[in-house]
Amino acid sequence: MECRQERNRERCNCTYEPCSRKGVCCDCLAYHLRSRELPACVFPNEVERTYDRSFERFARLVQEDRV
Image (cartoon, rainbow, N blue to C red; front, side, top):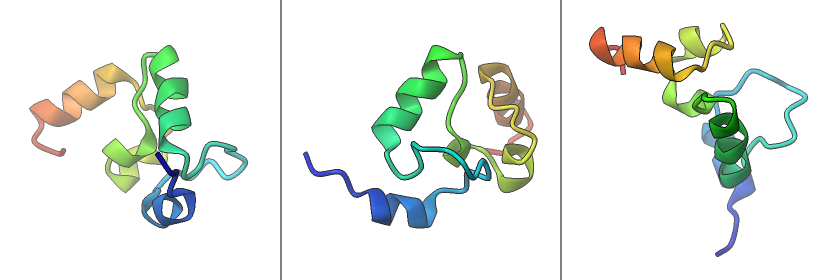
């Protein structure tokens, strides 16, 4: 399977600039799952900027109908 890194970067809302995984979704997802987190792209921009990408934060957003 061909990685579409440049295309993915266009839609990536991650604000952590030195991230080496930007646009490489499989690496990003694996990295965050190891820490019980989800990647930036599943969070609204205002939440993503807090860097709280925990499963718990995502669950609260779901309960609040924000995602």
